[in-house]
Length: 471
Image (tube, rainbow, N blue to C red):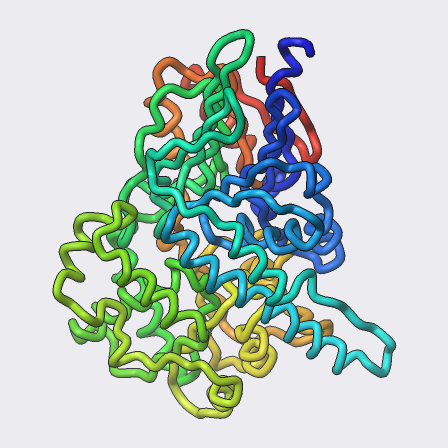
């Protein structure tokens, strides 16, 4: 085996796009996957990519998972369904969260397929879920919860460990240390990297020595609005919506973003900055995820400020004042309830779940306000709404958009360009190569240009399916 064939990396998702994070490291013929996410976007393209893996699943030795978000974890049950039987390493909070998120992903796929097939029966159109809840159960049995900074041996000469990534509860950077003929090589995959300032999370840890850095570039060309102003902007936006006395729809990711928005709403209500309003979190996962957050009140993922604020507080996310909806009948009734209300529901990019049913019924009303509080990937319904589309398809049927759509850019859990430059610039010595992943083309290019201006020019922009040796 040639020296430069001893260690390789291939990019099969999260390359030239922000979804479907999947990377494959090969060390002396041993295959290790970093993340195994679902693709989001146009249905057929997303399905095709989600069903394609960088290697025959049964030949993969181990999977390291950065965090529980579906675009990083949602392909795991399909990987297992197709023959993977090895360990899936993740942090303990991530393991707990996966039990909720993956099961919900399977349920939503089953329900969306059932609904789609029903309304298109006359046309002879049908779709099938990628995997079922039974596949998820098999996947959960393979999880190996692993604390931050604890090394695990994959094979002789290759070890992995996790460090806090500052993105969501339990999120981790993945470190792989390979002992090659040319010497020790350290690969660090940031997963989704958190911000330096956050409402709930600690900033990312310093990764130490890095030879090859895979870093996200979701906001590689942007500067976020000050997170400290998020409460003010949310209050102002809701005040404008009050004038219409109509519903406010908030598509929101069930993990972290929902808790963050609910936490801020609770603050605003207590301070009298938002008039009393019925707030509904229309997601069966919400209380389950909150319980997981409460299971780890002192976890190093959380900021010191947040840990101090919730100390001795049994209700940090407003469970006593904000109604959590579980049943389908209750969810359907929300649409028929007249007047002012706030409905939060998944999915965050409007690609599935209960938010689609609310949008289907309310997107055509001028009194409706839609608040987009998370990243909207290209090709998603959320992105089309953010871009000002006048007509959108929901469950394959066209709907005119009369609602007011307001993207709020304060709430991102991703590092922006200044954060990314600071993180990379602090590495000493500099990495042999910085691979920019998990970013749309224009964002990756903007970050590359900014890095070059800072004197960091050993930067690669991998394409989907590309492979490169790590000498």
